[in-house]
Image 1 (cartoon, rainbow, N blue to C red):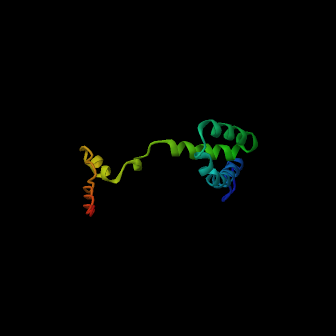
Image 2: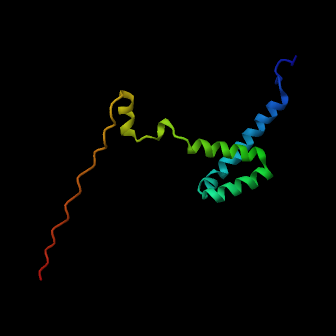
Image 3: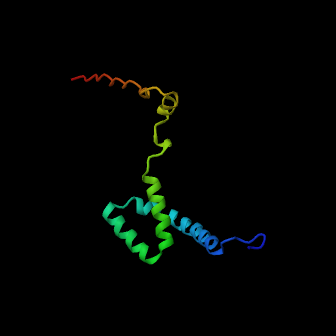
Amino acid sequence: MPEHGTPADPPRAAAHECDEGSLSRAMSLFDAYSDMHDENQAAALAALRMRDRPLHDALVRLLVADALDHALDVPPWQVHALQEGGPAPRPRTAAPAAAPASHDAT
């Protein structure tokens, strides 16, 4: 039985601390990896997996989460309509301004 104040599973607690460090490093790499073409990203992730598995896993979690659809991925004007259960209204756009008349003295 673990003593009061000590983790019940020390290896798991150590892995969690490792994940926090890996997550921080993964966040610093996220933009570079998310901007890569699929083939380049796959190759870079494979190389990273061989060098640093916890960092690879954290980065893949971020990339997957970014690729998924989220409730906040809808334009603001659709949020209210979705909550009300009705069709989403189209945003109002300003009418294009008329081109100024050209007064050529030719």
